[in-house]
Length: 305
Image (cartoon, rainbow, N blue to C red; front, side):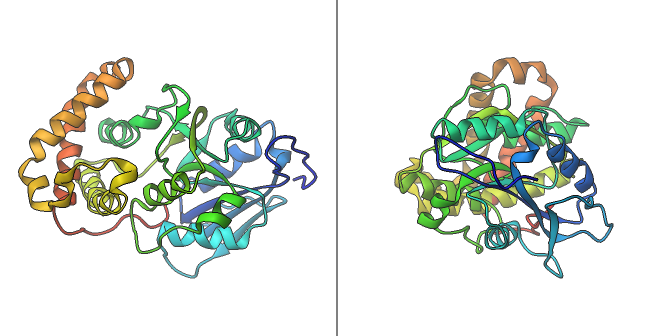
């Protein structure tokens, strides 16, 4: 990989890719997809933070493992990755996200256009009913079919950030097992670094949630932490007043879930009506989110993928 990439607009000279991973079974596929990018020579290093007990990490120049010795939450792994890398541009990629062929090109282009914080798209796809439902429910705002535009916040599963932004706002909040990306990118926007959504910088999210129970638990714990973050950033995020009352969220959960599901379908009709059978399941995931927001956090699956 080439550390001598010359950039013209944002001042970025070197690129580091940071991947939190707890023995991802597709880690080799993810890394290979990065190395196969047309502009792969622009990447100085690919750093996997966590565990790779199966030895799937390919032997390639610039690719290395930061072994955490045991499981750590994804927020901790990403902060360790920030400390362990030297790039001016840091691309955060989950270990269950497979970059599509022009993923890197579009991330770079967005930064060259002057965007310091860039989130890529997620394919509205899945290998089975609940796998698909999870992706449709959780990532409807960042479908690869959605338009490019500014966003109030972005997920970290496919996110590129210039190091000057991190120097200004600090790292991720490690007390948050979930929704640390909501908190982090909201802080970036509050500091004057407007997040930009670039749908063409797309990934396939090959996660490990294939049953209703797995999806329910994940959405519930997401709701638990997301409510906390939304209340903490109420002014910046326009958080409804009812979010201050967990009991009220549970009481109104069917109505909240119905309204959110209807809004998802209304905003993404071509995609959602193309997967018509998943709409009732998306409603169920929003009930789960509300129940998590209105109660205690359950068992966490928020450590590295």
